[in-house]
Image (cartoon, rainbow, N blue to C red):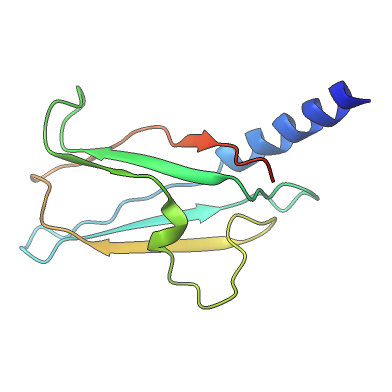
Length: 115
């Protein structure tokens, strides 16, 4: 039974990983990065795991960058909102001047916190 539960968990986690990520940046000095996460609407597609993200200004990760250990800390959905749940579109904006003219989005890392 535990194997079936683990397989089901990883299947739904995969659905979450297929969420859509965007970064919007204006070319002026007031750059703002916005990450949109759309979680699949299938039953149990959400997660309470900690979602982290790496952003760098060049593809080999040797440039200026930031690691967001807990993406939910950037969230603006309001008090009590349950992030990364089935059918949700969660928005995470952050003004930033720490990047160059371009930005690469690397694959999000998922850490399971046991929930």
